[in-house]
Amino acid sequence: MTDAEIEITADLVRDLLQEQHPDLAGLAIREVAGGWGNQMWRLGDELAVRMQRMDSTPELQLKERRWLPVLAPHLPLPVPTPVRFGEPSERFPKHWTVMTWVPGEPLDHGTISRGAHAADTLAAFLQALHVEAPAEAPIATDRGAHPRNCTGGFDNFFQAVALDDIAADVRAVWDDAVAAQAWEGPPVWVHGDLHPANVVVSDGTLSGIVDFGDMFAGDPAWDLAAAWVLLPAGTASRFFEMYAHADEAAIRRARGLAAMKSLFLMLMGQNGDRGLPGGKPHWGPAGRAALDRVLKGV
Image (cartoon, rainbow, N blue to C red; front, side):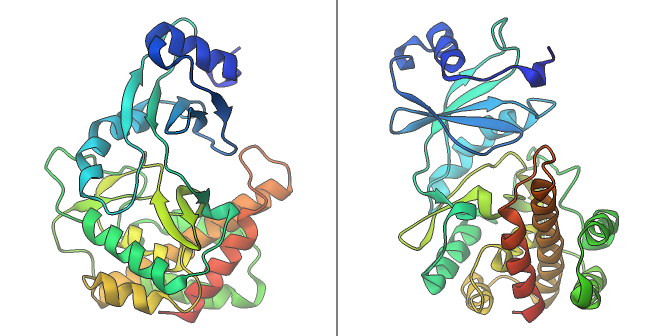
């Protein structure tokens, strides 16, 4: 049995806690649906255990351990903050981390009904996050580049998803992003993976941001794409007005990246419909709705 095939159960989580953090072993343990690279388990009411599963290296968890405690105090929404470290052992040869639980429902299973409030909330969060990163901050290897350097990934998604009559319009949005001026400011902190499964909602609006494993220092346009990927139709303009730091080139790059992220969600939906590993059937409609918002512009 390979490491990736180790079955992660409540008993395993409890055994690991008993070995390394016995004062937490008596708390209730409940599996959290979803997750691919990592599997989440609720631990009591206020904590969660993040178990490395399909991620081939511990880099993403170690990145969260290093930087979330630095960023969290300055952010206006709850984010998961590491409180205990679990180290590889004979029982489980991978990393695991006890983190604070961010209450709410993942957006891919919920809805935003208070669009203006959500736009303002997301803008305030990204204003606080997008500050100049220190020299030792992580640099992305598979994201964070100008759209012109991501055409291979876009083309793969574009060709894999049946777009029919909107294909030319989607291509035009991407080409416009590729032609946009590059980010010229200092590298800022970027979440890097804002999509409906990585934010939580309550009372009809955004209430928390999770999964910072892909965070990096770079172009904020990668997060600004969330104006279309996360927010309801008609609220992107309000978001950019409240964010106030995105010039025309940044908005063009962000819109193209939002198109690519929407195609990714649609492809994950297709994979789910086909029963492929990691596929998410309910992401397909979310991706198509996001793509429709992208095509309508700001």
